[in-house]
Amino acid sequence: MNWFNRKPNAVLSIDISTASVKLLELSRIGANYRVDSFAVVPLPQSAVIEKNITDINVIAEAIKLAVRESGTKLKEAVVAIPESAVMTKIITMPASLTDDEMEAQIMVEADQYVPHSLDEINFDFEVLRINAKNPQLVDVLLVASRRENVDDRVDALLQAGLKTRIVDVEAYAMEHAFSLLFGQFADLKADQTIAITDIGATMTWLTVLYQGGVVYTRGQGFGGKQLTEEIQRHYGLSYQAAGLAKRQGGLPDSYAADVLEPFKMAIVQQIQRSLQFFVSSSANRGIDGIVLVGGCALIPGIDQLVEKSLAVPVYIANPFINMSLSNKINYKALSNDAPTMMVACGLALRGFDL
Image 1: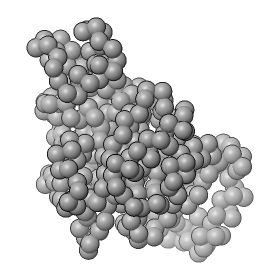
Image 2: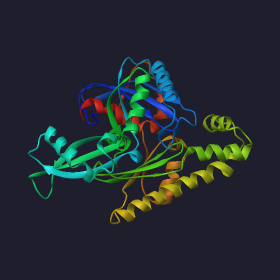
Image 3: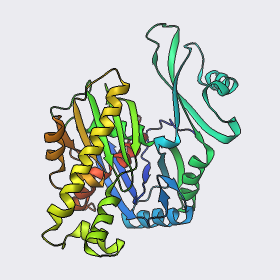
Image 4: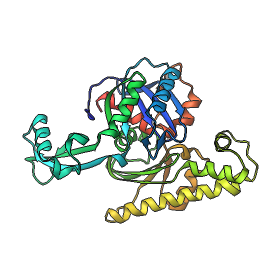
């Protein structure tokens, strides 16, 4: 599986998360991007558990629905696996080797890098840079994952009538999309240390970028599901009704003080704990800014609360802010979903030879 395919053609981005399937199609004219189609289809609770697909058929049907709702005509797609399912390692190799020679050497020496036999994994590699200490060597990023992590996603797309052209890693997709935020936030610089906090339905992922590249990732079992369950418990609703009320409103006036504010403080605590782990593992490198991603980034006032509590500039991601939209795109719907679309956007960029 070629994870680092660089053909400059548009591909259909399919982001499979715990809560939904997100579809995005971008086109490019010069340096400018346009949103041609998008769709978000919710998933039942049991379809994806902690980012592991448990029901390929359900995922395939959701992808089919997203394709139908979006109206896209593309049949080649890019998908990602979570960083929790991936092993990455920077290795050094002679700069004189061709790609084929590097692959052959990696396969011979694979037992040094991967704790599984080669018939159990998919792997790929990409030359990053000349080694800083020896110009005769290059630093090579090696990425490996057990076959089922890749195959489940490829099979789901195939059942939905799509061909998988690229398999990426969610953290690297986030890294690609991050470059789109510079025009949105003047204070955000490429050489800073930025913490992207993706607060999804059941997991919160911290991805730290330094000088534009991923240097740290960490996941925790916390997300918007806890708020839904608290609404369910507090007001005696079904889980489905609680989720609907969370999104559409209609809860009692006491909701903000009794349920929402404690949950917002829990978000702050989760972010603070994740950052403490990063700082302690990185020679006390500080954070220059925090970018909030995911459904919980849409909670009113969460950015101000995190910024006040942690004394770090906080931004809510919108990767589409400088993009044009095709006539069929609902601007309000896209804006509402924007903080949840960072991975999808990063995947869509894969087709443009960035």
